[in-house]
Length: 488
Image 1 (tube, rainbow, N blue to C red):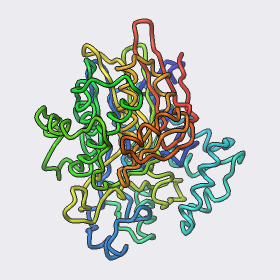
Image 2: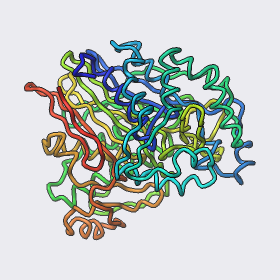
Image 3: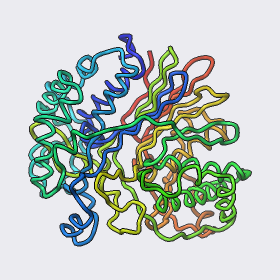
């Protein structure tokens, strides 16, 4: 798209549409979308869908033995990706949606050969959705090497190209989406889709050693990245790799505890980003960080993930950081066969505990792990970056910022480096096997419970970045993913 004269927004929407066809286990029109765009100033877009207006916590509790399910119809909130694509194109697009969708439509109509990596995703997902009959009919026999054709997906994209977002949120598509959810016992209605409303916002920022890091506000966990970086900004990072990793992990743990305690739909939050990033509060949290010993906070609420992160930049100074997701794999397991839509399970982030900040409520937005990011220097874009990975997203942001700012790494070097992630449900620390043995040994001596993770583990996220320098763009794509850094 860039080579044909399109801009960064044209390119990123076209790429996202293709990914919805070739990686339906990460993203697509049944999920949500978030973005940060720079066009001379920063703009944030929150494409976070709301819970059905006619469903109560008691309804869900009665259907699921008092627990918020992880999969199924009651985890489906209104998908906002389609609204997000059109919101971006209305402000910056230079091509029609039909032009941008042409590649995705061709791949859906004519098919594509499923890669080894992609085929493994299909095979693994079968165990997630054993009773999802429509899903099994669509995907149950896809293997590595399968030539996979999806005419219903092409039909959907053509309809949206002809009718705009109303082609999705009203009429036959909305009715089919609601019917699929209701057939599985959920309460999503066509009126819920008709009332969809993503929103523009101002990104939130924090300084880290002279670099401004921009994230999106709640309901995303972007504030958790900024809180961890603010805690670290007041410390001199050790040169010793064991000591440094320990300090980074402990800062992230403090931020994730606050995420689970305070971050949700901003309409429900009593403590907001300004409070969590205030100097006095950050100093209090920093004082809790033991430079020598690991802490063991109460268990939090883990957030799994399966998402696509994309970034784009063009010569006219338009920069885009975008993330789009079904949440976990193919999402809820509710599939709309007439239109090829996998409905996400973002509502599984809700709790049914009426004392919890993320307690389910009609029309409420759940906590989102999705966090596109932008780093600025001297008020101008320096690096657009982000990653997929659920809980790992905030943790990877912190690691990448530290490597790029503290160590001066270029994006490709920072992204390819070994990674860790800590599990908020257990506080076990997972480290890729590429770390030297001395690092996990040293961390265990400091009280961390460590677990080995495979080299280039997908659970550590698929990060991508574009750096803007005087001599041009410097990009990096994650070796953990099938992505690529491409330029024209």
